[in-house]
Image (cartoon, rainbow over all chains, first blue to last red; front, side, top):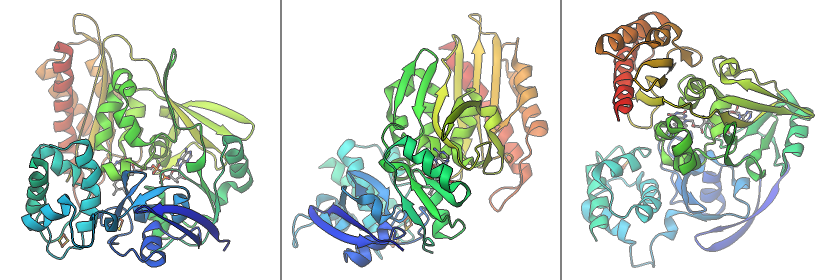
Length: 155
Length: 290
Ligand SMILES: Cc1cc2nc3c(=O)[nH]c(=O)nc-3n(C[C@H](O)[C@H](O)[C@H](O)COP(=O)(O)OP(=O)(O)OC[C@H]3O[C@@H](n4cnc5c(N)ncnc54)[C@H](O)[C@@H]3O)c2cc1C
Ligand code: FES
Ligand code: FES
């Protein structure tokens, strides 16, 4: 299969790679760039674990092809924390509110909530529930996730 | 669960895209938002030999108000339509329906045209297009035609599009004076495909008599279903509780053919259709009163 060379920015770092067109963006991030924070649960758009930011908007990376990112700017969960010893306020709130157990779903929730809170810093409970309706968590029962979001939105 | 190999083509103009479609036709698939196509490719239920990606193509992403109505380009993202003040003002039914489509992350990629071309019987936009008598612009190399939504949907995930044709634009006719619309659906969770949904578009005289009515259902058959008789019952009348109940009963018991699945039996879907029809007409009545 003919390969294509793409140049993209992920977490402010520029990458150039040559890929097969059928390579999913989720696999590209994990296997080619080693950014394994983006998780893969279902590969058909249902679970939300693979959510990343594409030009600032939350999208499913399992439903895009790596070749489609040429010239675009991406952000994954690895880009969230300001430094190795410091968490992003949203991550800190998840930590404090016990909003994760196994943590498999967490990157997807964080990347969904980041643009949501930027647009709507003080959401209602109903708005939060709708915002996370596209992300599945099999551990927490969502209540603590809700509380984490309320915690950051009160700051 | 990875796509089978394909030749990736990313045209930058419509002319080029139509030429590629002409050349590869049957063998090729158009990639719009990919929110329905990529899942089936991941499962290898679809294995197109050529993928024609429209995401680099400029010119199919627009929302324009013209004298003949509201024009929405096929590649306009669902999220853009959802947030457009022009759509909210000129096509309130579309505006009201958008948040019911999947989740924000899906709507950020999914396109207005892709949802209609995909013709999923559980999708909201095909039903809304039918309720509003939308017209669809279908283009192929060297020619084009405009088709009414009523003639576009031909079966389960099937449309009147020929393999070398593309949906490029949707035209929503101007809202006639006195038109009131509403949308409702029942889904197991917000963002899931609806078990049943109904789009209502009614037109009233100044004294609140119904002049025209279109009740269109989703998820109750192979294609979006216009309840002809129930809609006709409303015409020439005022929306009383009795009339609403009669129409809801007629629509749910005679005009839809839902099939049961693991989430709902056919009988339960009929029940839901009746309840939703009643509620949507009550909502319309409230809005007429405003
Ligand atoms: C988890 C999940 C939940 C969802 N829930 C809902 C829901 O509740 N309601 C709903 O309506 N949808 C739902 N969807 C589907 C979503 O709305 C899709 O975006 C939409 O159905 C297809 O649009 P697309 O732009 O992504 O098209 P694609 O996936 O790119 O294409 C779909 C099909 O249409 C063809 N096509 C696309 N554009 C054109 C065109 N312009 N001309 C001709 N053919 C074309 C493609 O070749 C393909 O066969 C859901 C999807 C997911 C993953
Ligand atoms: S892995 Fe992408 S949504 Fe589940
Ligand atoms: S914390 Fe385990 S799935 Fe959410």
